[in-house]
Amino acid sequence: MANQVSVEVVGGSTVAVAWTQGMNTQKALELAWAAINNTQTFTYGLQYYGPQLGYMVFMIDETFDSFLSAAQPFFYWHFFVNDQPSNQGIDSTILQDGDKVKFSFDRYVPEQHTGTLLESKFHFQQRQLQPRR
Image (cartoon, rainbow, N blue to C red; front, side, top):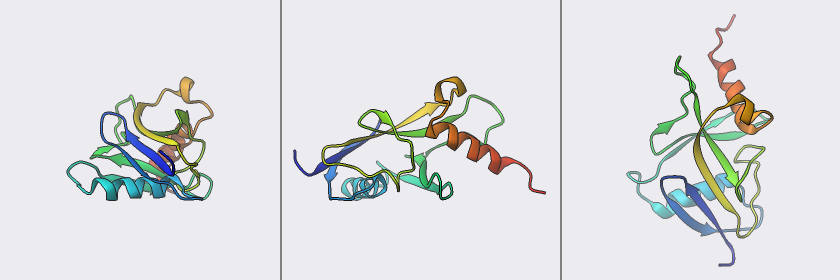
């Protein structure tokens, strides 16, 4: 259908929302939340990772990134556009009509995620845990 994008949470909700020229992924996520209109079914949280990375999802449906645990493995919310991992935050990822946005809760594997946004997210969060001097 014309003038739509889909927003999917793997293992959860999928919803089509109206696409507009210049729409970013953050706007699509907001429209998906409004369309579902049920916090028992769909919630999310964002964190700002600075000007280079922008905003990223750290929680969907009360499932949080697991970087605070001393135990590994670490899991993070990872997002894709048309099944390709995004290389920037949701506020900087501009969508086109018909795009498919997907959020997946993925295990961080350094060898697999080298050079990806997920690696950047991992390093950013690990730096936040370092004691400040």
